[in-house]
Length: 419
Image 1 (spheres, rainbow, N blue to C red):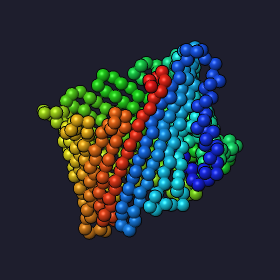
Image 2: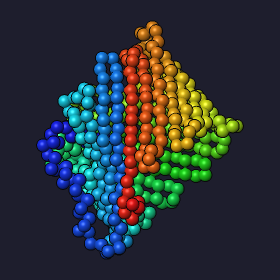
Image 3: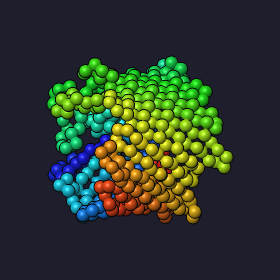
Image 4: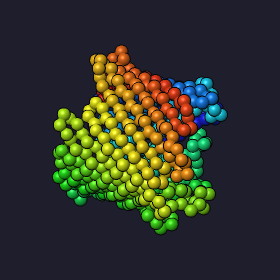
């Protein structure tokens, strides 16, 4: 989830400057002179160029992930975390360009031994039953006798007007999660998430989840109850078995569309859907693996079948897929390769060649091709460089070429990461 700041952000630049200066707050934290101070993060520059029929786009990205942390064994730790990204389209700027995206900007305090944790600010939260980007607080307490408690509250962020901190009376978000482990192999969780929009209840769910591990078996289950219309929103069960040379997994998923109760789209009758997925893998001589999967989508009046089989190693992979039923027919051959032929360089590539038909009334099948090649390496001992070229073609786009460039550098100063 992302926070989108348009041109209005420039009129409030001081607010964002103050936000980024919040790391100085740890200076008031009462710790001894032996406290450890650290600053670490990643600066990333990206360029994404795309040429389609009749249009060209070239979009640079600049992003920052950073955390400043002050830690003392007697008093705990306090940290400021932020993740932001700036972008614009140089060749074909839209009405919202340039754009500034903020994902995280919050203060977090942890008590000694991490018995409790308090986060205050703009943050993405997930309670198990729902998720939101909010301006508010999140409190975690635990472990205590195999139990942990998490509570959250705040106002949801409007992506179209992120400069405004909305009122709790009209856009309140509340949630929580209680985790409990009766035994080490059986973690359980009870979650709750509630959201209001313009003072009207728009989302309210109660969730229950748990997992169990026993020898080569792994199981996981999750239920989510829609408390507004008293129906099950999600039912998920997943199990796996691993005993060389075999590995199997099975999954059943039932889900209803997630539409706000006070949205105009809630007036449209929506149908839930079910999905069954089976996968299998067997190790073969010469480090080969045989992979297979079967996926069935079940609707009230139709079905979708998808089957795949292939071979893979640590260097390459080849798969054939077939789909039929609702959503059309599709046959495709896919392959990928990744190797290190030269010291320091990683070369990779992938290709997908297929023929598809979206509707039964369509007599002929259309071609769909997707090819990408790329390279990555460590440059000057501290920069990570990645270059990738892509070519796509289908019934709609006859010539779609793309170029991607990424250069990033991590930094760490202080006791945790060194100088």
